[in-house]
Image (cartoon, rainbow, N blue to C red; front, top):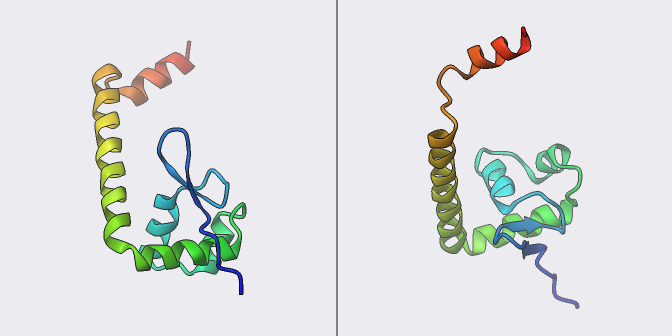
Length: 104
């Protein structure tokens, strides 16, 4: 019997992708935790194979602490990036600015 290979790989930015696609580990785990089945995740992300989704969920369930730490680190990084972007590009009044630009 051949062991199952893990469909997870780090990209050049240190983000874990699933099955050689652009879909992240974060995306699959978040959908699973919201109650989506592997089949529902496959419908939402057709680039993923069902077997890769099951393997990813299985990995998450077997390594929950490690994956949760990774996800928390990613969440904190996203918050930092958002704060930096909001400092550079004030989000307040953006709708009005975009409408004004459109009406020129």
